[in-house]
Structure formats: structure tokens, C-alpha cells
Length: 226
Image (cartoon, rainbow, N blue to C red; front, top):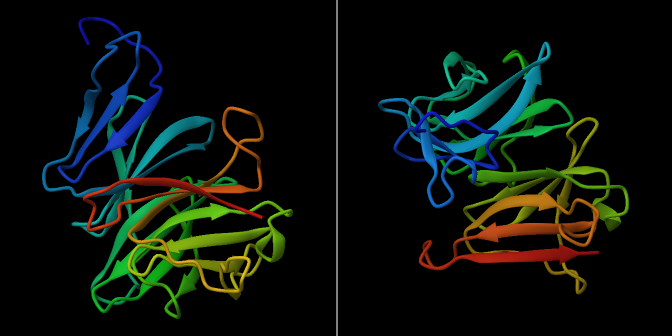
């Protein structure tokens, strides 16, 4: 912008098919639109590397694909799972340990989680059906996260529950419960991420979440600790 450039601190995608970047040294008060895809409906965003190059992955819920942008925000590829049932659409994408986990919604109310490599190649279906209901948030837990340690956690938007899967084989291990044994349910659950391990971003076994309760009228940021 205005001849200035810098590494973005935050990246955002929107339901209007845009991707914006905020770099305070470029514009301290506003993000800059760096990519726009007509007809796209972006609902999730991730960063990854392939063959030493950086890429951005945007889940396009309207067109049943994940768009891949290079480091110059140029659209270079789109990937999907053509074998999924009709009505399945990408909802979110998350880079965990160098693998892209893509969640899919389904018009029948279920869901699917696929794995791709960062080059866009399909690896396997990680989880499908069962208790998945509009899955969006996804994170890998550390080994010291109680009975749900060293697992892939997948949050449902539809019922606010958090599904637990073995990180190795994707075997379903139940849903996250509180200290009384009751299944945790967070109204309009969205993002999941674990702390980074310092005073500024929390302990590594603290599960932070965002939600939009009351049909997104309100916003909620909270933590689940073991």
C-alpha cells in the first residue's frame, strides 16, 4: 500500500471471498485486501510450506474447494475431495504438524475431516460421520492434556461439543468432558488452539476457544484447562 510492504501480523479471509493482511508498519489502523476471488465464500484459513515455499490455504465453502495462494497472494491451485458425498463442502483448514486437516460440513448435518499434504495432495479421510456436526475448530493436544492427551480435537459448531480422535489412526475416543463427567458444550463453538507455553500466550495444556453465542450476536473467548 502506497509503496510500502511488510510481513503481515494478521491474515483474515471473509465470506465475500477476500483475503486481507494487516501489517502495522504499512497501515496501523486498517487491513489491506491482498486477494479477491469472485464467487468465493471463505470460511477458514491456514499457512503452510511446500518445497521450501510459503502458501496460504483458504476453505471455499461455496465452491467445494480449498484455494491455494502463493507468497505473492496469487491463486495457484485449488484442491478438494471429489469422493465425498453430495452436499459436503470445505468449512475450515488447519495446518497441524505439516499436514492440512480440512473439515467439511454436510447438508444432512454430519461432517468429515480429510488430510492433505501442503502440496495439495489428498492423504486420507481422517474422520467421518458419527458425532461430527458442522466441524470447524481443530487442534492437536499435548500429552499432558489428561485423558484427551496427544489427540486431534475437532469442535462442532452445531452442538458445541469437542470430539477426540487418536492422532495416529483417527479412532474416535469420545467427547471432551468437564470435571464432573458432563460433556462440554459451548454455544456456537468456533476456533480451538493450545497455548504457546509462556506468560503471554498461555500454558501448552490450556485449550483456548472462541465462540459466537446467541446466533453470533455475542463473542466469547475462553479456556479449558486440565
